[in-house]
Image (cartoon, each protein chain N blue to C red):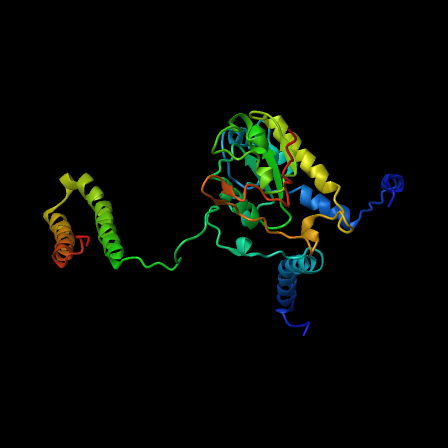
Length: 123
Length: 202
């Protein structure tokens, strides 16, 4: 077993595991035998800056937020592409201008679609 | 072990200690205060943690924004009756062992606002206070002195025996009732367990 080339790695793994677990075990033993736990209703309550928590933490977010974020992200990325395009505009050929136009028109089409679907209106 | 023998052994290069000393040394050297301020004293508390006064020299620089990780509550300023329930609840939510420093005239007695209808006349009415610092506001040196006083107090605590601290006593209660807003005042007006109501003699 000791002749296996992975043996030192195994030893290191065990040592590393012990290095992490030993302090935890010691702290747990100390707490168990020396310092008694004192749980109570106030202590175990949810921490909310000293106030009593109200309602449920499992709230649902409207999917409209998600669509809004997606649309924002698309136009955010568009701005990243538009800036170098605008800087190099005078030196560009017809092909570059056309491809950029296609790119922008596709995004505008997406926006028009979202608009038509009523994503941009909050109800 | 007696002190003389310990010093003699130390001179010979033998370091001896007890579990109690080691435990108290560990606790007093890393007191983590809770990060909250109530009023103007909090500004002095902030100054204490900054470079000029440097609370870190005593192991108290790690201000925690959660009571679960804090050992020390510094009541830095006026406790209004609106705020008192929150302060008491936060104290309850701290893990044992926990300590309280009442900083400034307001925190220890209500201070200049004592006659006010909305000011609590000392936080020690609801939670046990370890060190009181007078002053309006106390200078950072005063807070450092309170901190060192608290460290000395921790150093003197024994792990066993009748006078052992609360967190080592299974029978000692750890819950301090949170007052609620009543019609005219907080209900109850004080925690009888920690603050015996003084008898007025006329």
